[in-house]
Amino acid sequence: MIKHSLKAIFALTFLSFCTSQEKTTEDTSKRSADEIFMTDEQLKNLSISITNPKKKAIASFLSFNGKVKPLPNLQATVTTDIEGKIENIFVKEGQYVKKGSPLISLRSMALIELQNEYLASRSEADFLKIEFERQAELRKSDVGSLADFQNTESKYKASIGKEKAIRAKLELLGLDSKLLADSREVEISKTLIIRAPIDGYILILPVSIGMLAATQTTLAQIVNPSDLMAHVYVYDKDIDMIKESQEVDIDFINASFPVAKGRVVNIERGIDENTKAITVHVQFKSPPKCLVLPDMNVKATIFSKDDEDLTFTVPNSALLKEDDSHFVYEVLDKRDTKKRSILRKMKVNIQDKNDEVAEVIFKNEFMENSKIAENNVMVLEAERMRLNEIGVE
Image (cartoon, rainbow, N blue to C red; front, side):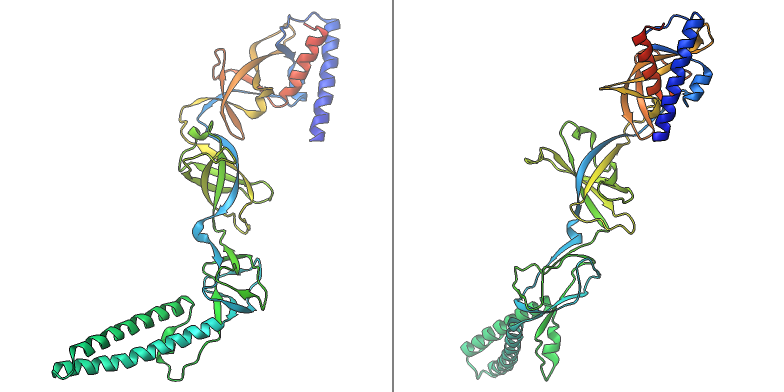
């Protein structure tokens, strides 16, 4: 960049010298304040090329700041359904785990008591089943009383319900209650294995061996960054340009990751009281081999495909920006008396733009075969202003 700047300064000095020489030796054509005369050689030395505005349809875009958020079904907070002390930790922070992989083992007295309660309820149900069948046979023979039969039936059904409820608790904890039911020599499990509920990376692991884990204790947080959401903050003046399904480029501000491709999936119907902005939800996939984590800052560039009209466009390198206005240098068809090109500064209005070209509206009639200067137009501007200051016509 320094090399190009030095080259432009040298060319500008050379241009000034040539202009002064020409003024003292020859009578130049009259120059208006918004024009500058250049020879072909001077344009070449300044690396200024001549191009034509082209008609094309370009996609408009807007850029907004936002933060990365994981999809709700791709993040998990791991807890325990029963109290216990941590006996072993099988993973570490940052490690990738598959769904069902063991994370932590708990030694739990409450687990032992629950299994004992299940075995008791199963034995009670077995006993009441036998009694219920006996009472049913007596009723068929008109021997037993109806009251005894109904009482036994009620207790039997209650015992079945209790057994099923405790079995469901054991299954939620990851224990196979069928093993308890089928084994003659019942083996009570003293430990409970906490397993990963989803595939993903261990984001937080705030535990240690011997720590008491209660039902409200967070044992781990897992996030799967394969599909992510960016919460993009859009102010109300721009919200009418945002629509669902629009394409979005996600640029990671503080990381050298490749740009990710996404799409607008939802627009909130309300303004956040803190940010005073409307949150736009953009779903995207993490770039390959890049660990994108929640709360990373991003810049979202949202593209609009609505504009299908062909309009005049010029390269961004042809634009000269002054405050909130834009200008180009139009190359006129005529030349001055010294056969120099006449370049005239002209104001334009910018509509849509992208990284290469800008859609412009010209105040005067401007045809496709018109010519404009491209590259180093700031050097032309500096020389025009210098000539105006010293009064060169």
